[in-house]
Image (tube, rainbow, N blue to C red; front, side, top):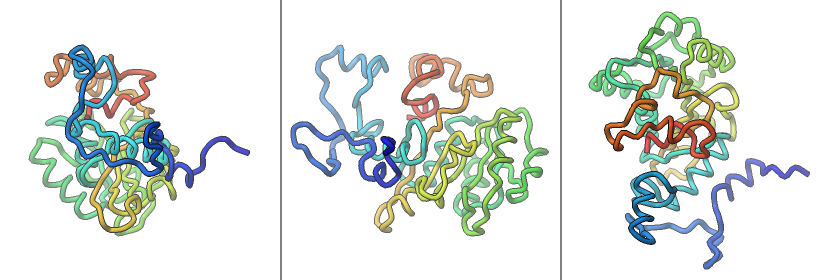
Length: 268
């Protein structure tokens, strides 16, 4: 008998450590914005990223953490970050690695809201979305240049229901050393398809659809496959001192072997 939990078990239990005091079977809802620190040194270590723990709910919340760990397990990733919507997930996934002057290549077979976000909103930030001819791999090639930072696909196109040739796209991404980002909303949280097992590096999805399943809650999530070298020189945001975090170099602090992955700590 396999000791590896199957999908059905993971979707019920992954990411949860039973509270030793209450023994609650259901995941508790921690309705708080802030957290207590043991002392000033403990607080300093948390804020200085020398220790891992809860600082502020915008960054980390125990309830959200269970959801993130569970989705990462279902998708076969190393870590995840929850967002307020699927649109927010894809926006943050891309702006985490692109700067003004950069571009990314996307299939033209996209959900309408995604297409408009890419075409209109990113342009205002100085980031160019270049649309290939559907999911024809060869049409992506002439659009790639030195400022291209990612390739973007949907697992199952919405609403066209097309399915890209992931083997070919993974080979293309490896050839040009570009991260492959896949919207797996229609992959049902890893139940129908796991892009990370087929060459993807980052997965985004709307949690509103199959993950939520009830039409009651808007949400999104980003999953890091932990399988891309962000220190390859293409992404100075990871290797150069961060203006927003006291000169911290994310690749040095969250580099090889980090259990949180290398991509998401910078996003948070």
